[in-house]
Image (cartoon, rainbow, N blue to C red; front, side, top):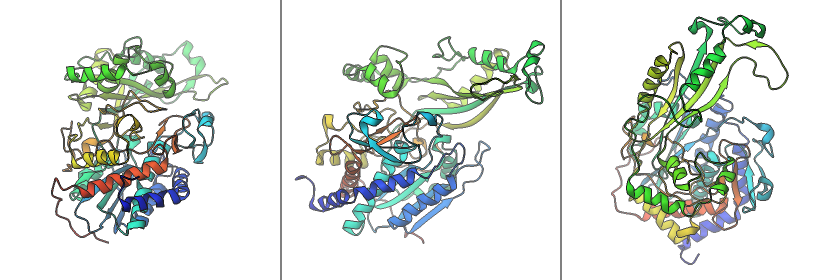
Length: 520
């Protein structure tokens, strides 16, 4: 604390004194479902997020109806806010307010929308004293509420923030950002004054499709609806055709796509990057990592290969499949007339999502499955993000040094998946992820991207932290309320946000952009 400026010490003390209220803020947000795939709670959540920004004192707050997206589906609302603090610089914050569905409710130790706080050991996390259990806890309401709490605390103590703010909160992150993509295309001017994006970084590419086999398109089997299972004695099965179709697209172990040209243009790691992976692999415990992630083992037993696959590899996943008798247990003879499966392809520079789908179509035709229908759900192109030498990144680094978090102690990077792709971060205590996720970096990045939408180009902050958390998309998703060290819990995460914003406000390397007066 002796290295922390006196003003920040006051803000830190305020955070400590109000942390119970701050945790309650997160609990209330968790208790509001916001499932983008089903639409449950999405309108209510958008208004709730707008209320957050109103309470912060933003002069402009609005829920935008983005309309029909280019993929034919309606996008979920985007919440925009602008807070004019009369400061020279403006920092943009990207949020998602949507979450994944709850697919296995019986596996949760407490209801996923209760936001219950439990001892870490109860959640299988013996190194963390207390955690909040809930859908969206780490992906991404916990880190985002820590940001909001931190900004509120700073403003309460100091009277105003040291930077102006712009918030963009989407409700489609778990649906390939289809609404945000439309919003940026239509309203990129709303971000023109942003000098920096608080967090960010590279992203893998991800393209999502549904494949459907039906008796109607095939010309065999049931046509109009499912029929009685006894009909299989005399009738072809679209379901079995679908299974054989899927099997024709991968190696027997399911790990290698058998799609002509799939790996064309795939960028390989450099010798320097491979050496980085080898250095990191020497400190890895694959068994511990696998257990923390809830998997039996990885495809490879070589740590270098696991890291290489996670950072530079591609994948063709079967996310789900449905049709016919979907009731668990019991009987019920059905011969389905239609089967649908959903798939995500993860890809890297210099690959292209739309190009992969063209190759998938060609391979299906070649394999004799011209009748199988492909529906494109969405595409998130890859992005290299920004240079590591941006003012906002350097502000995060200076904040870490100020707070004594350099080196091995700086192990809890952003708990959600914003920074996983391309970031050689130290291993976390509970969820040391070898693999990365996508995020819509390409919509904001000032570096190289696979596709540009709109005219937004903002330097990003690498290294922003959002507290400890894990089990995103899984049962018993958690966010650390109280950690073993001061920085592991929610109060610590908030203090890091305060320090980073303060450090950025002191930076004068790049002149701020001209500002306009915020409207009402």
